[in-house]
Length: 53
Image (cartoon, helix red, strand yellow):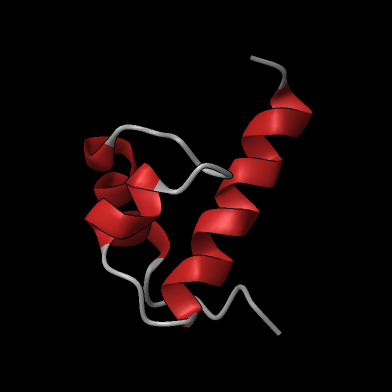
């Protein structure tokens, strides 16, 4: 998977998190399609940082 695709998935995961979806729903999203554990680690690391403006 290319780096730009990973960045797109991270941005999309953060956008979905901001809409109120839980980690499982985000992981199962067709636009993210990542393992739930990866999503959990992402939000654990940067969940308190306001990345979406």
